[in-house]
Image 1 (cartoon, rainbow, N blue to C red):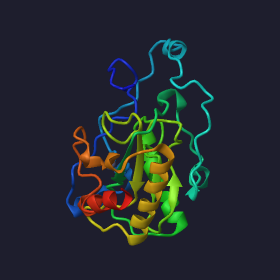
Image 2 (cartoon, rainbow, N blue to C red):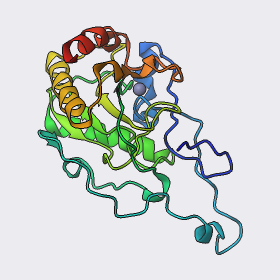
Image 3 (tube, protein in one colour):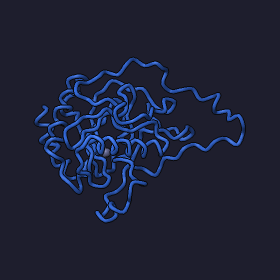
Image 4 (spheres, helix red, strand yellow):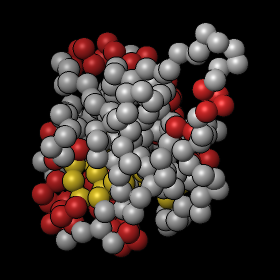
Length: 241
Ligand SMILES: [Zn+2]
């Protein structure tokens, strides 16, 4: 399924990204524009109908018949409930298809060095709020890896992610917090990414060759996951192969 019918409410799932910005520009962006690696100005919410009651309220069916089966729980992952009370907009989200791909991202926001629990939770919530503010159903990524090596649950794995333009079907998204055009990933973060990739590859039978960075998708015109993490991709794939 794709989300490209222009007659429909704009849907999450086809984010583009900000071009690389000079460091000073990034510092001046502030939190107001910060919305994770999948920042895009192209998505706007549908305006309410001038008619009342809005006929769309009665013609649009939820896209996901609920309840879906429970998402698999993966060992060592901090549950979503630990960092947000926000829930996904289930009428604007697709069910996850069988997982064949894993894609790695950075958040591309201001460089981030914090390792404490509260700061990391707040960073993830900031990204979720940015994505929701664009009318997307939820944070776009399924997992988030912080600089101390924690792995956090993002979008419920029952739902398709929103992290690679036109390539979200069966594609599990992992975000490494930070901006790796302007900082290095930490060793703890890389080790946790390696561990979590192995867990996901085993759980969903994904080959190492199907583990990509965001910019390795031809449809993605992006610098994500930043040059300093992109430089690690070959080693990451060799390690998990
Ligand atoms: Zn990305």
